[in-house]
Length: 210
Image 1 (cartoon, one colour):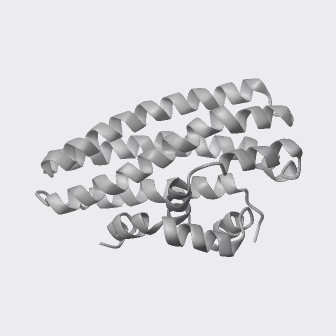
Image 2 (image 1 turned 135 degrees about the vertical axis):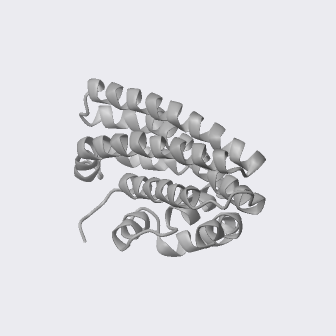
């Protein structure tokens, strides 16, 4: 398997969820309030993970990357893409909220279109970021700056950490799992996601198996 950074494995989870929402909204049964509530629950997790990740990139990853040689101009471009993505995310958030309230066919179609737009904007950004930054993460992974960045990202509550790991591994491919377990020992990962990821496995994961 080709080596992959944790960052790219997280991006894969965003791509998976976006496609899951598009598939689910494209076949949404009008009037199904239970399904609308399920999708809103899954959306709340996705929305939170995306905001947390990209705010963390700006606050934590970009300074570390600049310290190991990434240009400020490139990071400014990526921040501009974050802003565009945030606007599309806000529109999709509103559309999912409307669907949750009505479970209507028109609202499902509007949510589908909004998530399609979010997918286009997000994937374009992720592709750009990976083309520019993934080689840096791999080449500089043993530097003090990148190691310190990883420790800072790990300073979250057990509840957030457990939900994150349950989510990021849900449907992950072998190379993505290898990137995740390469940054945290498998037994520790099992405990954190097992104990603190129960909410995700109970309330979100089943949405995609329905």
